[in-house]
Each structure stands twice: as structure tokens, then as C-alpha cells.
Image (cartoon, rainbow over the protein chains, first blue to last red):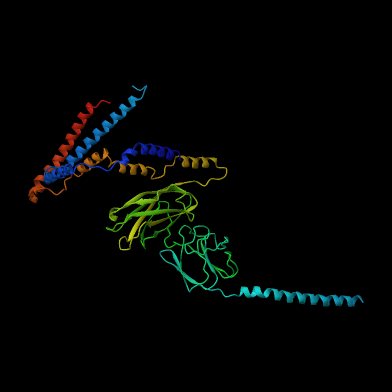
Length: 87
Length: 370
């Protein structure tokens, strides 16, 4: 019950903070942008016979994941330094 | 003289006994008649709409459906066809016939259908007939320690399914997942009612019971955010209803997967303090499965709102990049050449790219300042 209470409290805080966002309508990128990605994909995929497309995509994903993790870490540390008495 | 008096006493005793026997016979006659009254026999059936229908028509006596046991302790016999939802949930009948709604707010092992020939005050008497009744007893389920899975056929638009879980030592959180089996069909809303010991507990517990899914394709339909806390030593039941009229031809069956992670409490001896402490720790720190489901629901809501919606859209479109998309053009392939030349080259390139990735990663980590 103690942990459940903590979880529920955190949820309530997040729920209140995100209230303005939930009032907004759903959005998506312009259709032209999405179509351009699909179109590029259709030109790349035939070369899968020679070039390992999936391997390249996996490596790109790993790079992006590592960079996101690093940026998240930097952001959290920046927040901690905003706390008084923390340098 | 004394002997004569003794004989006279014996004679009077016989007379008194005879008179008492005669009086007893006179008094008991009506009771004997009542006891020998032939009971009317009524056949009844409960259809899928929870209506009770009687054959033949009831021509005398009274009828009630009592939720407080066969004695039907309440003094009221309702006469309305749509009975109030309290102790007595049935209708009183004196002549005529019809079908009577079996109130789904009161059902369980202690519900009795009672025919009264003796009186009409709501109390069962001699010669009355009662029958244990569970309105929706057609589908009962016993849950094991890891839940259960069942598939039910939708009979109509109202009651879809019901099942009883007897929770012994278990205490936990239950998730109901419904997956539609048919590939087409539209519906408006599912309503899931939670029952505890024969009583609907929606009003008393903060349980999300109303699940909306407008215009859902049932082939991909999955609900998993209905939860209920189960307590020990109680019976639980879940009824699933449609909120709007729907026909058999649209949805045929729904798969219900009742999973719950249970915590097993120990049965503690009176003096076993350590046992009580262990149970207390379980109570304090046990986090039921599904406690984070609310966060996931919130995430799915937020991820499509600005500004996150743009990022989500971009990620989804980039994730669509793969090697299986239909190409804008086709490269001619000669199988022997592909197998002997291109495939080895492709495999070699894969390894080469992975080595490049490792070198690039090492170089990147050298630049990172923590």
C-alpha cells in the first residue's frame, strides 16, 4: 500500500501537469513529409539485394538511442545543478 | 369403601383421557387438511435476457424472488413487473402469467424463487415451494493461481458473460483483457460490472468500468485497463455488457483473459508474530500488476498531442523504413549470381558496418564528458 500510494501520487502530479496538453487536439506531421519518407523508402528497398538495409537502419537506431540517452543524462544533471547548494 | 373409590378414580381417568383425545382430534383436523394440501407445480425457465417465464399460468398463491434466503424474511411482496432493486427483487403474482425480470443487481447463491400457497405476507410457510436461483449461472469460472482464459459466445445485446472467481488466500490485482474474434463490426461501448459476494460493487469501489471503443476493428481490439482489487475469502464476478443494441451477426465471441498477479498471505497461528509481520510487509510493499497501466494510458494520450505528436509522427514514419517495402522499381535478379556473389558481399558489408559502428562508438565515447 505504501508503494501504491507513492505511485498514485506521482501519477496524480503528472496527470495535473499534463492537463493542458490533454485538452489539445491530436496532431501529426504534414502528409507531404510522411509521403516523402515512404517514397524514399521505396527507392532504397530494391537495393536490399546487395546492401544490408536493415543493418544500416539498426546501426542508425543504435546511434540515435545512445545520443538520446546522453542528452537525457546531460539534461538531468543540468536540472540537478539548478538546485541551490548543488554545484 | 376405599376400593370403590379407587375404581371410580380409574373410571374417571379413562373418561378424561377419552375427552382429551377427542378434543385433540377435533383441533388437529384443519392442520392435517392444510398439511395435505396439494402443491401447485410450476415450471419455469430463464432465458438469455434474464426473464423468468412460468408454465402453466399461476392461478393462485404468490410468487417472489428473495435475495435473503429461502425463508424470505422480508415482509414485502412486490407487485410491479420491474421490481425495485433491494431485498426482494421479484414480483408478486396472483393470477395471470408473464415474464419477470430477474434483477441482475441481486444474484448469487442466496437468491430463491419462492411460490407461496399458504399466505401472502412474504413469509414462507408450510406447503410453500422454493427453488435456489442464480440468474446468470450459465457461465461460471473458477480461477486458478494464474488466472484463466475463456472464450464466450455473445447471446444478445445485454448480458454477455459472467463468471465467479472464488478467491481463497489470494489477494491481488486482476486485469481483464478482451480481444474480439471477428474481423469486422462496429460497436459503441463495453461495460464491465464488478461483483463482490453477489453484490455489484461499482458504486463502492473506484474501478474503471466503462470502456469505450468507437468504431473499433475487433480483430485488433484489446482492452486491458480494467482492474479490480480482489480480497481474500470473497467471491468475485465480472459481467460484460454492451451499452447499445448489437446483433449476433456482428460479434460472435469475445475472448476474456483474466490475469492477476496474486500475493499469497500466510495463515498465521495466533502466537506467530513473525508471520503477521511478513503479511504486513506484503500488504505494505506489494505492488499489484497493472499499477503502472495508468501511466501507459496517459502516455498513449499525450504522445499524440502537440508538441509530442509531431515527434511521434516523425518516429513512426522513420520506423516504417525497412527492406520489405514494395520498391519504386525492381532490380533484375539472377539467382545463381545473387547466391554466389551478392549475398556474400551483403553479409560481408553487414560485418563491415558493425565494425565501423564499434569504432565510431569508441571514438564517440572518448569525446563524451560526464
